[in-house]
Each structure stands twice: as structure tokens, then as C-alpha cells.
Length: 520
Image (cartoon, rainbow, N blue to C red):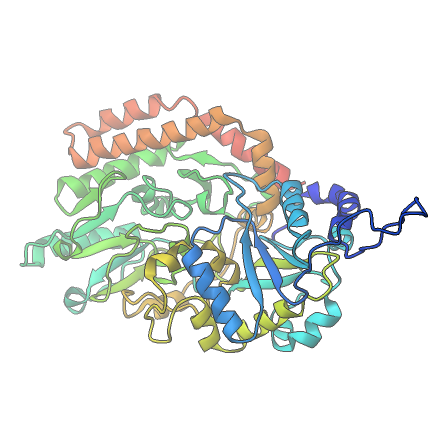
């Protein structure tokens, strides 16, 4: 479970001092007994029913905001949305709180959202105890999502297992029956590529590997190597880290957290083996590798393609990547998850609350919020309507507006989010077959993401981020030299590349320092 930064420990007193700005007290003791006129202007009239929901992201699309607020208003629910533009990086909780307190001067009922539960000892000084009103005003939501012993937080977004940050291979259905084999490992995929090269007669290239998957999934140019590394005994650590960095691995062993070693890809002897093997696939004309700065070619030219299964789970990721073509139309393909029984999922395949809401102290009538969440989660039609999707998957608001309204993420429910209309027909079946387990280190990083993110910003400076960027660029160039230019001496290119990675050891140490901090 995510934990909020310990910074909130110091905020309670500040809140109490500042909260008077939200008071409705209009009296003023006039020391001059001869002057019966008030010495201050009476405060403006507040709307005592409307609830203001403040999310720690900017409201990027006014069009959808207006759509959502009008939709709720038409259903008798008075809600308005306000965004806190945190900029880049870790949320400064004091600034976020001050922002909400400032809003509180003109809005009587304010609710804040966080990406994890606030510890109860902190919440007691900051937020209203909602245990009674929650169960009374939103009984169905309370029964489904309330956490025992939490008198303050309201879960507003859940992931019940539909997402997975693994790699998969899509194969055209017209070849499946003739090939009649599963693809679960790099060796399996190699066998298919060789078969396709020898047997398909339609001039399609057997395979395609895009080297630029989602930033927080398989980290761009490291995708081609992630196909091989699990077979060599390593798994990617990157999806579990709060920092956007790829090419970091741990051994696939259930070691105690304190004994886990972190390896940069180029520091592993197995890296050259994987790189040369991929080079052989390219030289044999079995695959094309598409680099970071290239667009995906026409998928009709290929018999198979490597993808991230999250491409087809829902539209949640599109909130963070608006305007990008993130999915390949896989309606004519079958999907094979790679290493479904061996590789744990750092983002977990099990039920996991993602976001929480808290009612600021001084809010006198937060009933509208509980009406809202009860309405939102009581019926799939309501959820689809609010998130801009009809039951048939069609958009009820402009597509671009839907993609760019990040507030929807705070109400994400994977149970009712429609699977992409371009998903492979066996998507759900494949996802059900995934093994659900985790390694101690991945569980630690996942459950402590918020505190680790704060630690990261204390330990890292701009030079470290520059090094990560340079490392990424060097891998882009390596892929260009090896797999696009089809260099005749790949071994020499790889050796030279490894020798030039001067910041590998420092990178490993920095990540290990994050792990050690999280393990305290």
C-alpha cells in the first residue's frame, strides 16, 4: 500500500492555524463602543452544497471538465473540479495543502485527492472523520472499497487486475493454425520467426519489435533486450521504480530485500549474448527493429509484433499520453504473453486501490461528494457516462477531450473500463492465465512508491537525470547502429558501447540507495 510522505507529520499544526481562513465567523468585536458599524465587510455568500474536488494535477481540458460538471448537475449532484498544477516531480504537500486552504476561503466544502492513504495520526489533524457519513451516505461504495480502521480516506480509484506491464507477441490468426505452437519465451519466438521466414508466402516480414514502449512500462529502447533477459535469469526492475529509467535488472530470485543487487543492463555479461542474438534475427531478415525516433510502420507488413499488453487493457494510459498512437490494431491477431508463469508483475495483477480522497476540516456539508461516488460506482452505465464512454465503447464526448482530462484517472475502475476495441480476441483469456506473485523487492518498491519518490528527489540532482538521458540516447544509437544499419561487426560495436558506459556503477548505487531507504 502506498504511504504518504512523512512531511505531513508537520502540517497538522499549520493547518489548524490556517484553517481559520475557512471559518464562517462574521462577528467582529468593535473596541469603540460609540461606533456601532462593523469594522470589516461581511464575507461573500458561500455555496453550502457544492463540493470542490481538488486533484494534484492541472485541469488540462476545460471542455471535458464542463461536460462532467454539467452531467452531474443534471443528475442533482453539485460538484466542481479544480486542479493543482504541481509542475514536474514530487508533490510538495505543504504547497498543495496551502493551495486547498486558499480555495477554502471561497468554497465551503473542499476535498483533496492523494495517490495513497494518509496515515491516520496525520489525518486526525487535517481532515474530517468521515466514518459515520461515509457508511450512511454511500453504503454500497463503503461496503466495496472502505478500508477497515481508516476513518478518513475514501478510495476513489481501483485496479482489480486487468493491467499488466509484461511483454507479449501478437501473431496473425491466419498463421496460428498452421504453426500450431505457443510463444512463451525468446526461444519460442525465435522458432516462430524462423518458421514464418520459411513458410509464409505473402512477403510479410516475420516480426517487428518497437523499441519505444510506454515510458513507465518497458522504458523505450530497452524493450528488445527485455525479450531475452528473463530467459537469462533477470527481470526488469524499471516498472516498479518511481523514477523514469529503464535497463535496470534484478535476478529472478526471492531474495530478502537487503540482499538484492541491482544491475544496469550493460554491466551484465548476458547483455552481449542478448544483443548478438537480436542481431542475428535482424541479419536473417526475420524482424525489423523500430527505433525511438521512428513511427511504427504499417502493421499489415508483418506476421507478428511485440507489444505491451497494457495497450489493450483500457484507456487509462491515454490520459497520460494524449495525441499519441499507442495501440496497434490487433483484431486480426492472437496474443501470447511472454513468461506468464515466471515473471512477477511489479505493478501487480491483484486488487489495488490507487487514489484516496479526504474531506478538509471545516467543510460543513460534504454530502454531495458521497452522493457522487455512490452514483458513480453503483451502476456501470453511470461510470461509462461520466468517463465519456457508452456501453458500446463509443465516445460520448470528443475523443481528444477525453484523453486529455487527467482528472478521470482519480476515478479509474478497471472493472468497468472497456477493453480497447482493437484488442486481440483472446486478450482476456491470456490475462487470466498470468501468474500472480511478487518478489520481495518489487513488493517493497510498489507499496512504498510515494515515500520512495520523495527520497529520490532528496538523493538525486540534475546531473543524475542528465546521465539517465545520455544513457537512453546511447541505447538509441546502439539500436540504430546494430539493428537498423545491420553492422557487419556487431560484437565490436557492443564491446565499444559497454566500455563507454561510465555512469553504470553510480546508477546502480543510486537505485540501491532508494531501496535501502524504503527498507528502513
